View 1 (cartoon, helix red, strand yellow):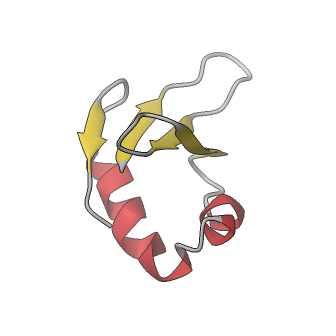
View 2 (cartoon, one colour; view 1 turned 120 degrees about the horizontal axis):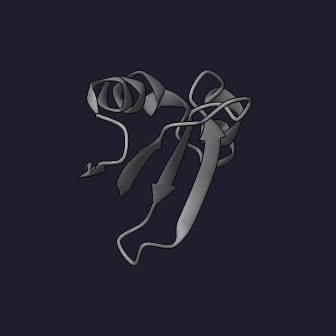
Length: 67
C-alpha cells in the first residue's frame, strides 16, 4: 500500500491518499479525519500505525507501507 500526503491551499484542507500496489485509489481522506475511511477498508486496528507513518511523511512524497 502507498501513502501520499497532499498539502491543501487556502480553504482546501490537507488530504491523504491510500493506494494499492497497482496504484488504484483505495481511500482519500482529510488528514484530521481518517477514521471513517480507514474503517471502510477494514483497517481500524492499523489506524495508529498508518497515522504515525502519515505524520512522519513530508507533503508531496509517496511512501510504501506493508499492511
